[in-house]
Image 1 (spheres, rainbow, N blue to C red):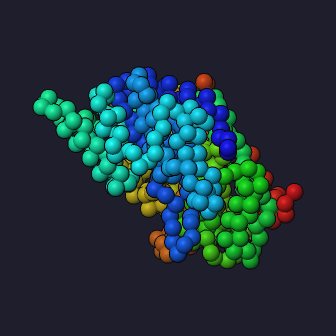
Image 2 (cartoon, rainbow, N blue to C red):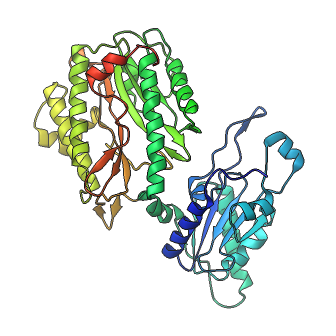
Image 3 (cartoon, rainbow, N blue to C red):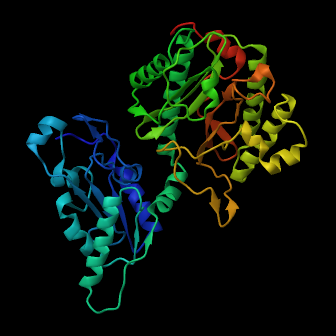
Length: 441
């Protein structure tokens, strides 16, 4: 018997918390579709974050149904034990193992779902489920609703109301418990160490993909399970493309390298961006842009404490970066008019922050009752201002064309301020110049 790699009491505590938030309901969480298969090759599978968050379950072809206060309360549908398939694909718990090892009240074969689910819906008043993730499963949920309605006869009852499970569970996941904060902190520490390893190894003539390989080697050596998201390794003008995906160009001396990469550790992910010269020395124009962005980033981090409206971080970022744009002569005119018109988006088109946790763009509301959400202790998010000046932007001063700078750290809000969980990744010019290309320690 393969034992679960996680403490099951953590998941039982989360389910108990969910029971307080969603009485009288059924929460339906299907697994992600099976591994993507192409030309007889399996691509690595990652479980759905919400399903794992409540169960610790990692196998595909599974559905978790949670009914607070009902008997059974926690129900898991799983694949059967199959010795032949295990020879090819690895161990399966099957219903019996899933029940005993993952503390489920009841388990079924996944093939029984369509018959059992309508019965599980009979005592509940509402359903929590997210549509448009798997259209085939959407139809199964609606079919279960119809079977449920028909089974009640001429009672006049219709379908149960369906609410979005993403919002319900996102609010739970938004504020990290001490255990979760510790795991997230570890993911950030692994990510920071890997960024340092890249800085030490990078040199002109390398390929962007080699840089990605160094990052991956470092995080795997430290115990990470996978990348937290698709790594961005962008040399030169590639850094002015926000979601650069090619990672295949040579790195040239005199250019900057922007690397946006994170490690996933026990289902929590770090998310760091650093920008620095490939040859280890900033040019004066590069230094002017970089120092300006760094100043804004530090100012935003310094604002973070409980009670500050989340939107205030973006407002302050825009204000600071517009000052930079005016100082560098990227834009001209009245600051207020530039902000109101959105003209600044030519060089800064994204937000300064997003929630961070089990997903790199994690769940949770940003606006509550029409107002920007106040920051609270236990929340975790990024701070990532940037400035991107396209190489073909003839309206910008020539010395700045092709420069893209983003600086990103991961922040955990404390009772009276915040903790920078990624401070171990250098971002001061002197610190970076001292280690770039110096080889691994």
